[in-house]
Image (cartoon, rainbow, N blue to C red; front, side, top):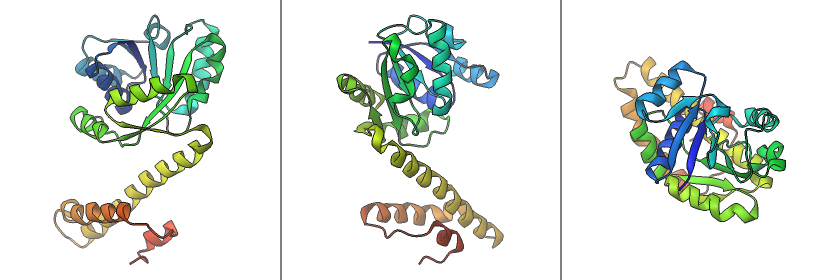
Length: 236
């Protein structure tokens, strides 16, 4: 079992930190400067230290970076300069946009880099997020020697691991973005139309058609369409 520190205390960090704790690992610290996030961690994990990044990762076995991937290289470079990372530490990115190569600045230290991205939308509500995580597929990647470790980590989080190598990462990130963005747009437009028509409980009304349409789209091959047509209502 590993000692774990989580950098970032948003919905992703909290959900994955709690999942690791449930799997038997010891989550010793969260790093966040947001007062609201600090209180959230203390309310959900009262025995966990909430502190700065350098203090949080000191002496731990695994550091989970639950922050936007674009922020990781600069942060990691600073940690290398201050000798905050140690040889053999496992460092994990949860970003959909970047694989384990995002930790390149720390390769010289001898860290073990990994990427783990659950393909779900986290809410910040622990019960919902834990249920979604257990039903999720998790995109993973790591150097070949560490692939068995990252697969095990994904299973411990509760999901089904799927390797997404570096060359496939851009397409994966785009697919995740498209699925998330256009779902929000389409659902929002449908709700607005029903509200403008004065129909009660619009969310409840369209829930059934949304679920069944999604299931059919996943079950059958779907012809590629122009997203603009969806918003104009031209697709039957």
